[in-house]
Amino acid sequence: GENVEQHPSTLSVQEGDSAVIKCTYSDSASNYFPWYKQELGKGPQLIIDIRSNVGEKKDQRIAVTLNKTAKHFSLHITETQPEDSAVYFCAASIDTGFQKLVFGTGTRLLVSP
Amino acid sequence: EPEVTQTPSHQVTQMGQEVILRCVPISNHLYFYWYRQILGQKVEFLVSFYNNEISEKSEIFDDQFSVERPDGSNFTLKIRSTKLEDSAMYFCASSGTGLSGTQYFGPGTRLLVL
Figure: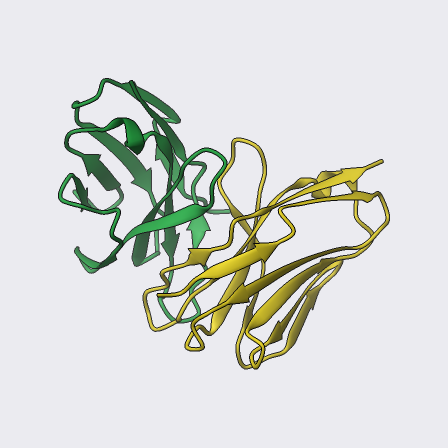
């Protein structure tokens, strides 16, 4: 089955810096890669996703890149703000109608003012 | 903005007791999911549900677990005889369509089995 690895497990940056979180996946059939942000005591919230027919997607300060050949995808956050502090999860799935999301182990991002 | 809701937010139960976790998915969504997250670990898929039947389940989802959509709005997860290792945060999610359907997660139910 699919296995998703995520690095780093923790990331501390200064406000205004960029943050990059990387994930690799094992199943070449996976074609949908969402990123979720989880704040303390809350459920995961989708922040951006990408499908295997595109290599990059951007939404304001957040971007995701996908390298299908290498089977890895990354989340980039620019101009980080303290409210970006949270746990970020990547996930992968085969989008055939039922998206069984396989999550990475999470990255705790801390943005210091 | 529509959202997935879950009740209760917290549940404490004794080992061996039955618990039912409830979810109200987004109203026009067709696909429903349960995930769990043991404290400090990653979110794990339990089961997906469509057209009143299970479409896929994980190894975790054994005979002690069942899901049901008893009416047009609720989606429930039942654990028949809880074990200590069932203590976790349980998340319900729903999506509008399978293909290209983003999964929206509820706030979760924290289950503690004593």
